[in-house]
Image (cartoon, rainbow, N blue to C red):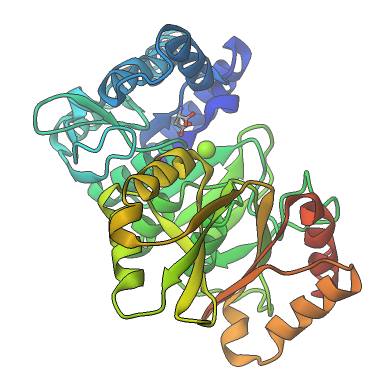
Length: 402
Ligand code: ASP
Ligand code: MG
């Protein structure tokens, strides 16, 4: 078997944990498997690098940030190979350049385009464990890029796809995917299985277990994913196309507090206004999520929408600069909001799921500001201060607890 195993920052945070991971991988290797390991930077090292950078320049060039970031993962893979060597097992560390992991040039949020499998294959054929840097890539100018925070998951899935791996195991500090973040919802339950689509929504909506692009990629290439703990041997959660074990109405509840709402007041109530507004944002590469348009009155209307808080300054800036072209009277930003979502493939065939969510929020006295739905999810925008309470109420309403 060819197994790709990815370990996050906490799993390699110190010497003891590095050896713990090394031993776990060596076990698989000694059974005769080909083993490829993908690592993140140790502990909170990536955050530390950001702090260091901002101390020098509060708006560091993105290319230079990527250059800086790459050392974090590079440190992990070199130390891991050394640990394996000291345990008498041949290993080789490779960075994005040495593998040749080609990405787009979007520094800080690059997308993988192509991975050369040849070097890795050669090393595996020589019976070495291959330890690869997560998160990083190279673009067509041979500059380093990164895939966005948490991007090592995506590196692992992409490698699994490129190498036609038999398994892709994502090891993290939680032991699987839960019905809700157990730190916020104490009675959350671990799922045995979840579909790619549900996982994708949960990952995008703030579940935090997997990088959303890794799920997208796993679905696209049919990579069988398992999310497990690096600290214990419990079974973990399988992410796959269709779930057979437990069919539930709702698979999870997610709370995202990284969104901010922008309201554009007094737009003209005429064709093309929404286009102008959102095209202006799109040209700045700003992702817009929930959108609400008011009913027109006296020839004007308002449009509010949410963006990631990291994009707030850019969004406000570009809208202010284009006020004369878009034509509106006022702009407001609201930071104290949260997006609460329920996700579940079971929703497709069961009416009344949204109503049940709204009822539980009503019982808690939580006001809803915006609503968005898709086939398998319902998202509401609420006050940030109500977030965790609302999340627990909804989780209880759907009987997701243990
Ligand atoms: N080290 C990177 C980060 O902290 C990538 C990762 O952990 O997946 O975001
Ligand atoms: Mg992660």
